[in-house]
Image 1 (cartoon, rainbow, N blue to C red):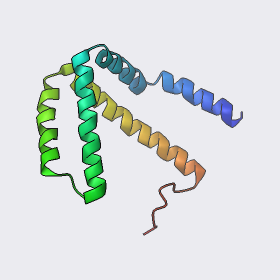
Image 2: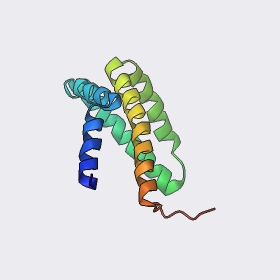
Image 3: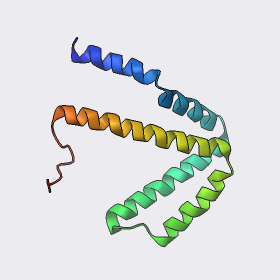
Image 4: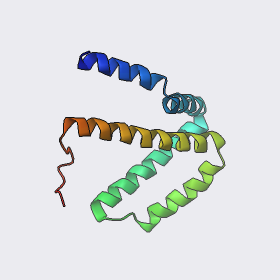
Length: 116
């Protein structure tokens, strides 16, 4: 079997993976509801803002933390959105594990961190 056959087999497994199916179904629910879709877009903006602050300043500002807290309350009141976020988080853990396996197979630390 060559690498392309293996990749196609992996893609087939991925399509039928419970985490992927759940994420896809939850995403369809969010996409079909304008309010939920807008809330998710706003949440992503706050996430990006927090990430940028963390990278530039070494910490997230109090204002951004407060935005997150307020948004968390709003999202908690939207069952489809809170479910989507939890499913997405579960998928992300699985995906990180898969990426680690692939990176280990390559044998190169693509972050180029110093070994301690």
